[in-house]
Length: 116
Image 1 (spheres, rainbow, N blue to C red):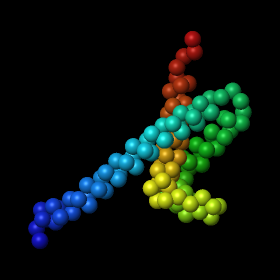
Image 2: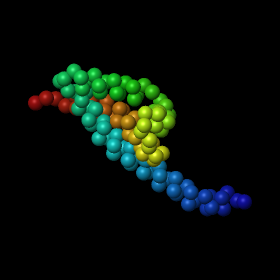
Image 3: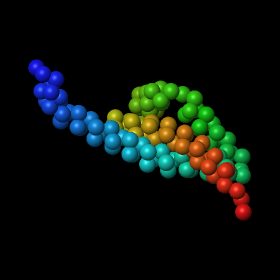
Image 4: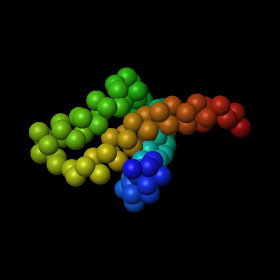
């Protein structure tokens, strides 16, 4: 079997995988952007508790590997009664991770604007 024949036979499966990857990426970016903006605004609040909550969230999410976060969402949440299908669990884990990283970028961007 030639490599070209093998590629043509597996093209539908590869295309389906590419579409699923794009779906995961777009959903995770959208939810991560919304979550990141919320956390960034919490971290520049004048009140103490939102700042502490935002710092703790960012520290935990940036300090643990993404694979561990995915395992916690997919395998850990059912132990407390929250069962998710694989796709929503993956999107939730990726979005939570992205939101922590984006919140720091947004916080820095907001603080970089001069008050006036």
